[in-house]
Length: 194
Image 1 (cartoon, rainbow, N blue to C red):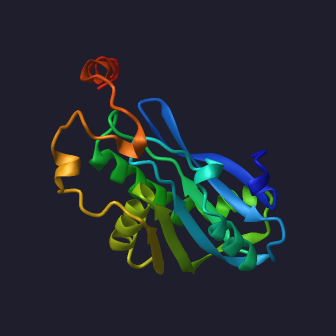
Image 2: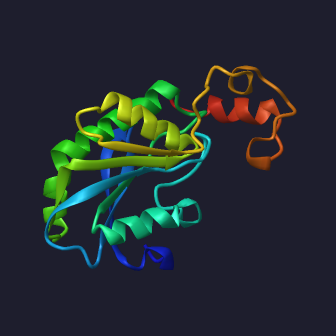
Image 3: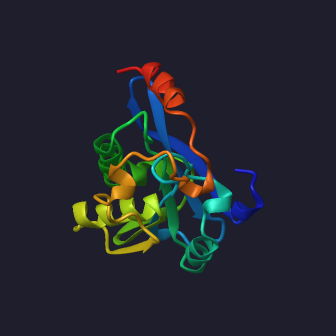
């Protein structure tokens, strides 16, 4: 990753899941100053209203998290996941479940394969995220109680039963963007494989 925000980390990506021929990847960030041996794990879920975002979108990656990882020589792992409207909420949660399986089963070997001398300390796992990422961090804490030690959810989506999410409206402006005509959405979804 060429963004200067990540200059103090060795950043690599790998696929943790493939769905209908589409790879879903994650980013692993290891501080260049990390001491060998067991290191805490910071799992960062990107925000984006469950409709956009990326694991390494620098503008949305909290500086405090990078600083915290450097301070504690912690490994950051940040997964991508499928998004609305092409995927359902259950499919997104399925991605997160499979991501946690990758963390437990594949992260140690992956770190070794990229030449790192750090190993994951599974007794120190923090899940965090903003907005949609905060929601996924909370869900991770609830579904992975034996693995996730702590959760930081910054302005998370928590009340999915509210009218904002359930009732269609042409006047809503998510993230300040004007709505596009429903026909654009319908045409897009028609082209999405089952």
